[in-house]
Length: 332
Ligand SMILES: NC(=O)c1ccc[n+]([C@@H]2O[C@H](COP(=O)([O-])OP(=O)(O)OC[C@H]3O[C@@H](n4cnc5c(N)ncnc54)[C@H](OP(=O)(O)O)[C@@H]3O)[C@@H](O)[C@H]2O)c1
Image (cartoon, rainbow, N blue to C red; front, side, top):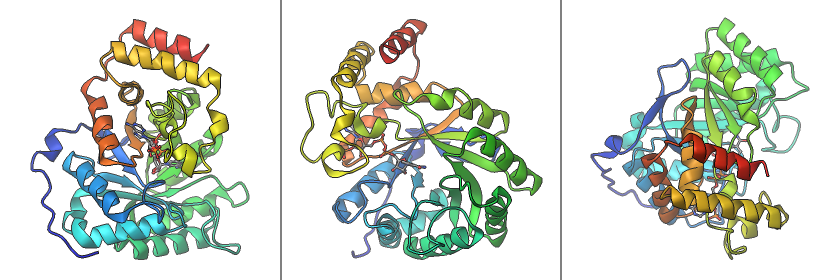
């Protein structure tokens, strides 16, 4: 890809809200952009850059990656690296870039989980792929039950000291381990600023312990798959469209789309329409109504989807009656 001159919208920071990541100096956009899908070799590279530019033009300055995003593993980071080189590099200081390690990445005993060896080597690879000197936040992507927690946490501490990551975060850690991890990091003067977990209208477990626990420890909660991979949009209300994630990815299977679920989605869609929102807008607004949620990381396979989802910010207030109606549908 050739380098291009890209001049972002001058009003970009006026059209987005920013929230503090726990007790830290970092403000993140209420809506962040994730690279798990839509940026692998099975998606058009130029179209991906249009999505990134549109996001940045609208105040999305937080981009969430991981070593294994693709397909194949590493492809999303490589692509992101080309975007950096092509048009984004001059805006590096305006961007908050995340990557992670902890899921299978390369073969052999060091390409997975949470050893010091794996985390340090993986971050070096990620930096090379992304054409970066440092990432803004480095996550341990999942808890490794076979590596001492102290080893994983000390690796994060040392990575921060080395300057290769400015902040650290946890993803999908069980509550008991998260509590110890927060304490270890604090004791070593590297405060954990974000806990990243799956949270959406169909997956509400984080409400029980993880979000209150993070809040108590001054850690921001950032929600991934806020649209349940597209289920909480109009995508599957009338069947399974060709080209949708359900037809292209093993992470969202047609078996998930039961008659019962479609019934719930349609009922939620009716509530959303009464609020003057689409189902996707309501699903994102419903998460953002909780101020303990620092940001929601959405995926988008087109600029149109991103554009629509950004409208969620316009109405984040819910009446008690609306919340009760939503609960009634979800608890049916
Ligand atoms: N820490 C972790 O373990 C972890 C795990 C998963 C994800 N994440 C992060 O979270 C990010 C987001 O996850 P996600 O992609 O599952 O998020 P999501 O926002 O729940 O789902 C995104 C998908 O929904 C569909 N969609 C989005 N907006 C739509 C609209 N307005 N109308 C119709 N369909 C729409 C698109 O799929 P199609 O158009 O392809 O059908 C899109 O790719 C990831 O990229 C990653 O950064 C982290």
